[in-house]
Image (cartoon, rainbow, N blue to C red):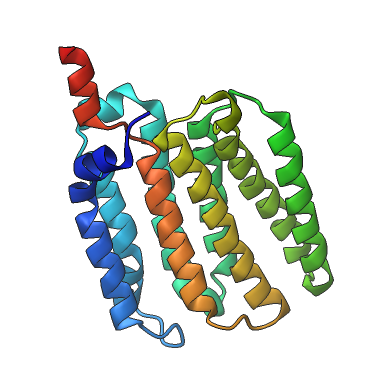
Amino acid sequence: MVSPVTVVKSEGPKLVPFFKATCVYFVLWLPTSSPSWFSALIKCLPIFCLWVFLLAHGSSFLGAHSSARKILAGLIFSALGDAFLIWQEQGYFVHGLLMFAITHILYSSAFGMKPLNMSVGLVVSAVSSVSYMLLYPYLSGPFTYLVAVYIALIGFMGWRAMAGLQLANDLWTWTKMSACLGSVLFMVSDLTIAVNKFCFPVPHSRAIIMATYYAAQMLISLSAVECQDVEVARKRS
C-alpha cells in the first residue's frame, strides 16, 4: 500500500489550485439570493481546478484509464449542475438534479462492478430507503419520483465506490479509500440539500453542503489516479 506521505508529495502540488479556489469561494461567500454568472464562476472554480488536476496527468494517462475519463466527464456535468443550482429559485433545480444524476452514473461506471460486495449494497440500500422514507412526506408532484430516482442513483454510486474497499482482505489502496470517503461525503452533501429544501432549514446548511461537496469531488478525483512516483520506482526495481 502506498503511504499517505508519498501520496501527498506526488499529488498534493497538483491540488494546490483546487484548495485556493475553494478558499476563494468560502472567503467571498457570495449570496445565493442574488445569482449571477460571477457567483456561478466562483462556485464552479474548484471543480474546474479538478479538471486541470486530472488533465495534468497527461493525455496518455487519460487515454489508458477509462475510469479517469469517466470521472473527468462526471466533473464536467457536476460543474453544469452547480451552475444550474445557482438559479434553482428561478426554476432550474430539476436541471441541476439531472446533471448530478448523470454525474453519479458516470462515477458508478468508473468504479465498476467488481467486486460485487452485496453486503455493502444491502447496507447502502437500507440507508437510501430510510432516507427516502423520511423525505417522502415532504415531497409532492414530480419531486416524489425525481427524488426517488436520484437517491437510487447516488446510492448505487456509493455502493460501487464502497464495494472496492475490502479492509478484512487487505485488498485496498488509497485510491479505493478516496472513492469510498468521497461517495459518503457526496451523499451527506446531497442529503443535507434535500432536507434543507424539502423538510426544514438546516443550521449552517450551506457550509455543510459545500464543504462536504468539495471534499467529495476532490477525493473522487484522487481515486482516478495512482501515485506516479511509485509507478516509476516499480519500473526501476
